[in-house]
Image (cartoon, rainbow, N blue to C red; front, side, top):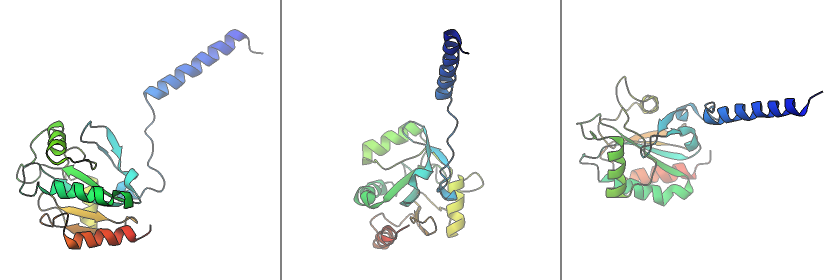
Length: 194
């Protein structure tokens, strides 16, 4: 039979255990329905807090490697316009700054975040500086290149991924966000149910 003291000690122990678990929560596994392509965690550009890419599963996703000092940097404006135009229908643009081409993204993550927000009003999700080519490429980029047969050749290379995670198309850097072919593909993928 428990005495009040034993019950109090037991409750105190449970409270300590819960507090310790709250401070050091176990990493949450990727949802079972999350396709392998999205089973990655990447720090967000603004605060470097890890983001599970599984949150974008089931949406049409435009993945773009970006740079602040490139001839294509003005595409940020068009990418943000795409994001705003189609987000309610299920499109998300994901930006991955990269210094892989021409040393055109040399700054720190905070400087990149400030530049994107203050110069182009970028609100679509952006992630920390990422390697997108070669052996050190992020696994997401390795998978996208494998599926399309195309690695990024320069900044602002684009991959469009369908809701079903199976349709993946690549677009060269010179393909502007308002390009009719890209817009057609976005519309087609948005109209396709998962």
